[in-house]
Image (cartoon, rainbow, N blue to C red; front, side, top):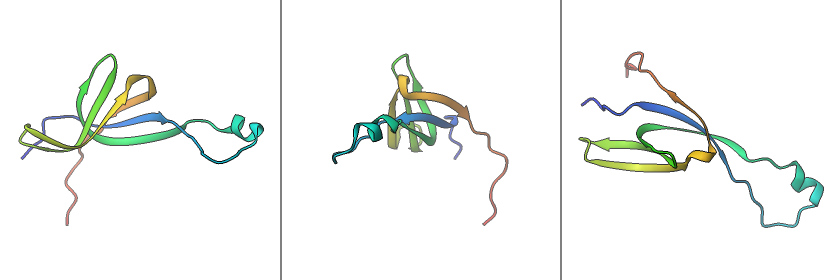
Length: 86
């Protein structure tokens, strides 16, 4: 079965937080973490990007992520070269 949804890698920035006591100087050194997610691109709107990791007959999806567009830094389409032999 061939999946018609494009396979993509999304690079995005995530929140970093801590519940412990930290000096102000150390807090000022902390930056949001760069993250990467790979999946099938379901939808892109002005507000969000939706990907899923699994799909069944274009009727059901599993393991989804909905990312706010403001945190998304890039979206790259992944190509399929060839099947990995087992």
